[in-house]
Length: 171
Image (cartoon, rainbow, N blue to C red; front, top):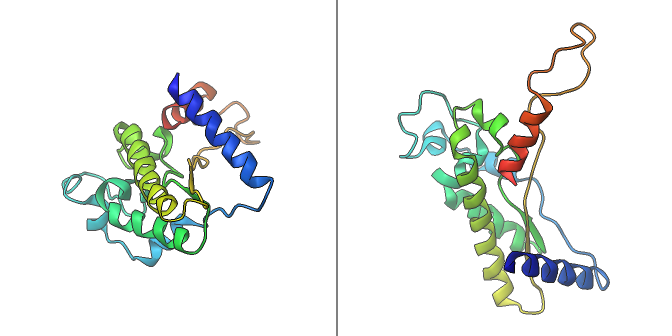
């Protein structure tokens, strides 16, 4: 439907731009988040104030509890000349967020992160029509590995299907 047309036109636009110049991708989100020195209260916000598990370092949840920090970082990268900014979703998958008891907010975190980045990109694109900005969804590895373990050759902490389901929900 319409999403396919949007993605095709975005892909065409990216290919056209890349045939004329190098596009700059933003840098590390995590490093800049740590520069804001968020506290446990920042990670929790009002919504997760009574959450039973510490949320410090669950950086993706800041999209919900401190969107101002994430928006500030996106703007810093855009002001520095980035053409493409990444969503704050490196660990926003079920397997990673379940460690914090947040497996049920994966879709919301990813959607909110995309909206925050898209709003910032559109704001900068509107200011300079000749330099459109783009958003890329950030998907990182989980903390689990499915690789061979010499001590327990048949053991895997999760199944392949669980990994697929975790990433599919994030996407």
